[in-house]
Amino acid sequence: MFENLSDKLDRAFKLLKGEGRITEINVAETLKDIRRALLDADVSYKVAKTFTDDVKQKALGQEVLKSVRPGQMLTKIVHDELAALMGGQATDINLKGNPAIILIAGLQGSGKTTFSGKLALNLKSKKGRQPLLVACDVYRPAAIEQLKVLGAQIDVPVYTEDDNRDPVQIARNAIQFAKQRGYNTVIVDTAGRLAIDEEMMKEITTIKKAVDPGETLFVVDAMTGQDAVNTAKEFNDRLHFDGVVLTKLDGDTRGGAAISIRAVVNKPLKFISAGEKMEALDMFHPERMADRILGMGDIVSLVEKAQEQIDEEEARKLQRKLAKDQFTFDDFYKQIQQIKKMGNIKDLMTMIPGVNKAVKEADLDNASFKNIEAIIQSMTPQERATPALFNGSRRKRVAMGSGTNIAEVNRFIKQFDDMRKMMKNLSGGGKNMMRAMGAMRGLQR
Image (cartoon, rainbow, N blue to C red; front, side, top):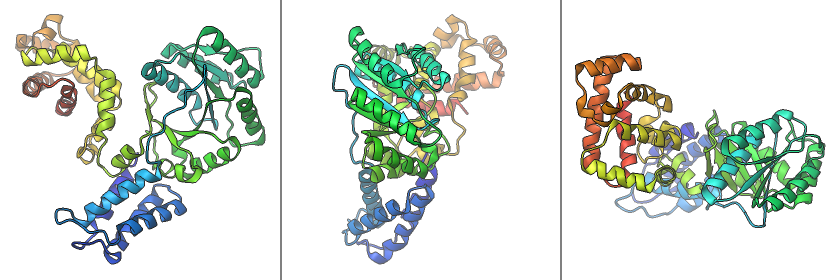
């Protein structure tokens, strides 16, 4: 997401000429290109024009320090305005009440049911909640079954009433069930339609009145672009939801919905979702997203993802092994699995400042680890624990067992040795995983 927009904004900033001061003359062409880049990203004309007008007003007459070029100064102003346009600060979900009730609404195909499961896992693992999923889409049996499957995957119970066709009554009964069984969070997955219609709006409004949720979230598919913003406005006019969730951000999307939806509906964007994995859900941080749009990376989110996967005691053990030069293939294999849980390797690499452009065209994904994993899995337990054992015959056997060739095995073992030496010199607790990621880029080549 945002790759095309990032490239166009980067080119626009390079056009800015002049020394000492940003003037109306030297900024005009740059702002014109910025507005065009936003329009190409499917941001509405009104939002794009207002945005560039605000940037111009703040930029004109700004003194530029000798150590800062006008383009750098304008980049800072655009960054701050982008963050403000998208909400300024992150907005957390409201979990007041016992149980806290969260109502999920949206069009059919927007990813509501999957998001409901992701949210349940997120609240369970990160906030220690005891969630209950409620299947209120009585029109699509597949939706109920899908929620059951998702619930089983994340070990969260799903409340259903197979013979009841009244979603309002099901929602009410589910809340009573939650109170009786001690579930402190109820997530109500409602029915969607292929388009907004009066029957759907009446039903969701009636459910909202009946259960009085502390949080109503509108789920929208980011790939629908500006249509997503228009749909959100129509829903909000009737439903008055509390926040927006953008799904499918890993798809072929230009990102305009993420940029302009707050300005149109005046409701915060609370979550973003990319990927099919149930862990692929993030709280929306406007400043961090502005960093990513402008190619500055998002190191804070990267560290947070790493902290979620790194066990502190395991990290200390690993640090001791590194210090004693005892890092093994088994340890490396575990590191790969931890990094894969964090998300797509290419997306993670783009969060590192300065790396975004370097990996944009690179063929990096989690499948790139397959050969490495196959090589390690073809080793005996003794070989994995003692890298120094490898001789020619062992390497030949591992190559045959892993479906690779001797050259690949030799290259992997050499790069592993080089990486182990680097990590020993740089051993420093949680930082090792970030260093390992950089090293693994070389191992995939």
